[in-house]
Length: 119
Length: 106
Image 1 (spheres, one colour):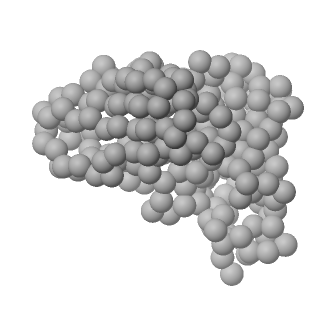
Image 2 (cartoon, chains in turn cyan, brown; image 1 turned 135 degrees about the vertical axis):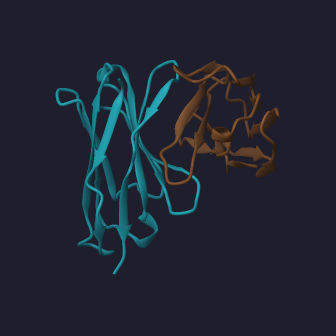
């Protein structure tokens, strides 16, 4: 059974000191064959793409809204993906989902982890 | 960026109905489109990838069609568990972009 389990969401203050590291642990499929992506969904709104990382961990892509503040990475030995979030803003408040997608397009979603940025 | 225009934004239907949701891309995305379902407070669930391929375990009452810029999700024999919000998303190019969603209500 495919499983994606996110963790690390929390309540943090906005600004330079507001940082979080999200994790996603994958099981039940060949992790190294899948692109990995973070998608977020603010409360009451639609999903928004955040960042993606290729199977080799070298190619990475970011949404303009997070470029320079967020860093995506993966560990193919630990079957895990991460999102380091720095300089968090109120508008980063959302549920963050981990998504695995294969070369042909099929994909799996995690259950999400809530990040709240508020003073 | 590729804009995804989804319609309608909401629709009312009855159990047993057939419903159709459309998604239009602002440029040719070949068949790089997924559809997914989301219920309140729950994670999205993928239904269709490659515009028309059914995800494993998804019932055949869901079907997708289209290529290029125009795509359709059809749900037949609507059941109570199908009342949810449906989104399209293109993966032809970064940034990945989503439709605004279609809420299917009773």
